[in-house]
Length: 117
Image 1 (spheres, rainbow, N blue to C red):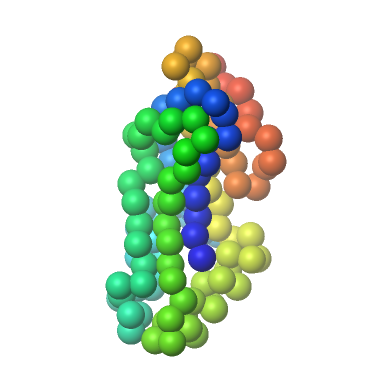
Image 2: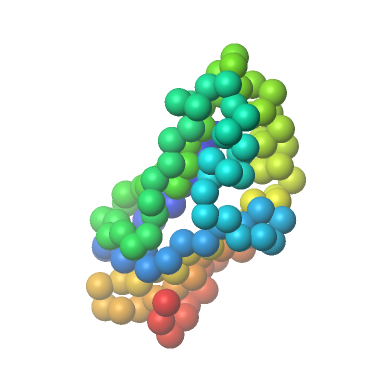
């Protein structure tokens, strides 16, 4: 499974901030959320810093990618149930090169224009 940001536009986007929460409680580390300290296969989870970041048009960036393996299957399945239940909430604020800014929200389809990030 993965959580990914994608620049669907043709121009570059400047990602100013990225927020993630589980059950409306913010978290900083995917490793904590998936309880990686208990995992048998720690190598299967890869995370990336998302903000601040410049993203070219049409590009994408993974915030988290977690491969399901025989060693982590039970833990992965439990987290996937959490994901499918909509308990993970992701938000980002990004701006164009013209300083037009928007917030993107994993629970809302269309980005919302904002004065600044």
